[in-house]
Length: 175
Image (cartoon, rainbow, N blue to C red; front, side):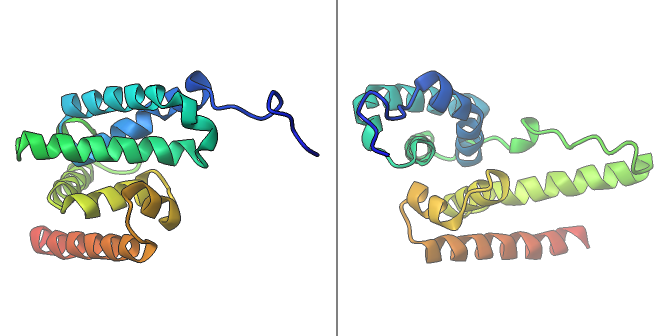
């Protein structure tokens, strides 16, 4: 079946791009570690994507396109901010496990979650981004490589090193 130009699916800002706002924010927050800066990055991303709307038809994966722009803007913003970062701890609360554990176990679990978040925050930007895209956004290695503009092998190495670092640091801190 051959589709005419008018029958071809088109990218819609409202249906295809706006729903990505939360993913973009999580990625930007993971890089900038600052909720206000992350929100600015998302807004800048939306403007850039909108300004490139004439080329949407040539883009294979609009989500990866948006995430790439977001990541690049967040990295640029982080470089301009210097190291004036906040912990993600203020932005993300541990889930409520009250029906599974007693209060003491809950406190221990919350402390461990806080520690892991702090350890993630301390990772180099590329490792942090790889982990965010893989473990939180559920992206494939191929998609991560496209978004971060690195090879799939580099993605795997960054994720491996990030997990190894977190595991080692967690053991040190938890003992």
